[in-house]
Image (cartoon, rainbow, N blue to C red; front, side):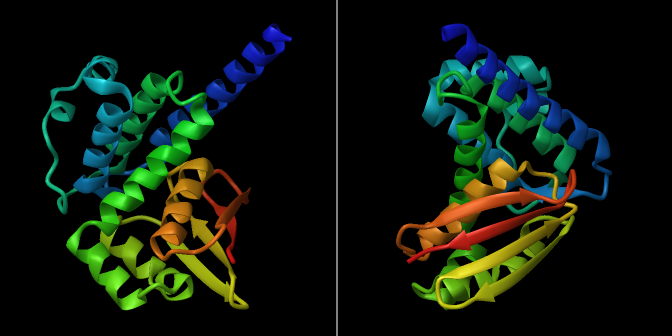
Amino acid sequence: MVQTNVSAASSAAGGVLSDYERRITLATPADTARGLFFNGVLGAVVSLGGESALKECHALLGDMRFERRFIDFSSYPVSDFLRLALAATKVLSARLEGPEKTQRRLGMQATRDFLNSMAGKTLLLLAGNSPKRLLGSLASGYRSAVSYGERIVTLKEETGATVVMKRDFMLPLYNEGVLMAVLEAAHAKNPQVRAKPLGLLDCEYELSWQ
């Protein structure tokens, strides 16, 4: 039984890591993300693993650029962000019970960092405590934060929505964390997010809450 668990964990880790590597090769120089997301990953590594984990992350990257703070609202290549997220996943997976939980935690951290920025606080103020209003601003929020992809939000009834992300470089598990944090920020009760991949860079997410 132990061997089966180890094998399953190893397979899951391999899938997440290889998925990152494929996405890195698909990113172009025009695909960028704000520095606050880089800082969020580095901050998550420290808060979840301590300074020793940060040193491990830097060693895996072997790049001095990741040893400084990024300017929050400057744009940087998303390929560099993916490399950073990949290194953070390798370092944190053992501490967070696997790569899947690591992705969700990193996605939640990214959203919390954005919502703590001036642009994010404006979105929260306009949304009040309404998940639907906050989700309605999701596409514009993404446009202010990344240069790539398309997000289509379809609101359903009072407690549900579908979000389709096209040409999005982050893993579905990561985006599950992003969307979960969005719902939590709007004080949604019992939020649920389920990913349905449509292709390597396309995915549909079903959201529900009470």
